[in-house]
Structure formats: C-alpha cells, structure tokens
Image 1 (cartoon, helix red, strand yellow):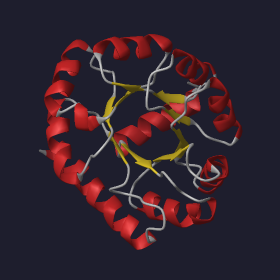
Image 2 (cartoon, helix red, strand yellow):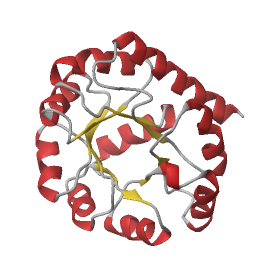
Image 3 (cartoon, one colour):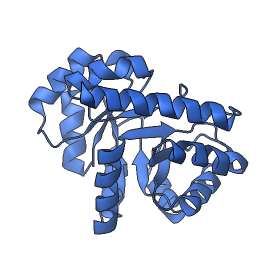
Image 4 (cartoon, rainbow, N blue to C red):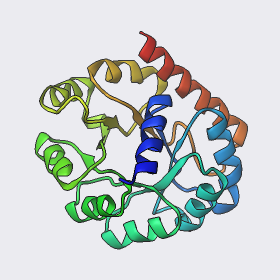
Length: 214
C-alpha cells in the first residue's frame, strides 16, 4: 500500500472501522448517500460491482469525498481490480479469497479485504498481501469462531465480520476480537431516503463507540 493510503487507512480504522456496503447504489444518488454517511462518521465506502454502473458511482464518490476510502465489493478478477483503480477506487473487497485478486490489489497499492471463513483461507490471504480479512458470511461465523481465529492470528491482523450485522450484535463480535464490520442492507438499500440512511449510520456509529467503551 502506498504511504498516503496507508496513513488514510489507519486513520479511518482508528476513527470508525465500519465499511458501508452500498449494494444497488445508482450514480445519481451517490452524492446524497455519501453525504449522509460521511456526516455520520463513515470513511470506508464500498460499491459492489453487481450494482448498476458501479464504476461511475465509485468515481463520483471518490471525487466528491476525497477524505474517504472508496472502492468496490464483489471483486472477483484482477481485471476488475484494475478497473476499480482506474475509476479512482482505493478499496478492494471480495466475497472470497482469490490470490490473483489480492496480489493485484497489493501490487497496485490498494486496500485488499478478501472474504475468508477458515484459518487456511486466512493465512493464504495474508500471504498474498491482504490488508485485512473480511469474515463472510458472518451468519456462519459467530463470535466464538472469531475468538478462535483471533487466537491463531497475529494481533495486528484486522478482522471484519460481514453479513447480517446489526448494532445489537456488534458488542459480542468486538469482545471476541473483531476490529470492525461491513454493514450492508441494515444501513443502505436502493431508494432509501438520505435521512433514514443518516439515522442508521448514527446508530451503527453509536454502537461501535459503545462497544469500544465497554
């Protein structure tokens, strides 16, 4: 990762390590949605590539919110990694671990969060250059499993459960060793009003703050 992005990533994780997953986002609503999230403290914005015209949304968010780390989810190929970078994206998130995707992202100096479920996948992803690990789907990786993974991984490895996360479930994961979360439909759904998104963003931010204070 290049020096500037490394610093931005560390600052974002320290401030609020929650990734907003904007599946289904349309480019024309990107500004309003981004405003609602950034105002709520979010600095990690992910537009899955199975959204309508995702690269346009990524480009728009990256230009409008330069202090945020914007990128793509559901990234499955090295070519998609390069396309995301060309659009101004700096964050590569995948539902799975593919060494070619992680290695390409690492070579280009981007943040790479591949999806893993097992220790074997976790160590392989880290060896390939992953910045952190997306634990997915979290519905199948309860806090007890996160605690077990945490026990065998180095303390600096960042773990982000993703899938079905709600404010009420965050404390147990945090206590088990999670370092952040990916938040999807509980935060954003296509067509949802900006004020509703802002309210959800605040609820998640408050839950995270409460979790670290506990």
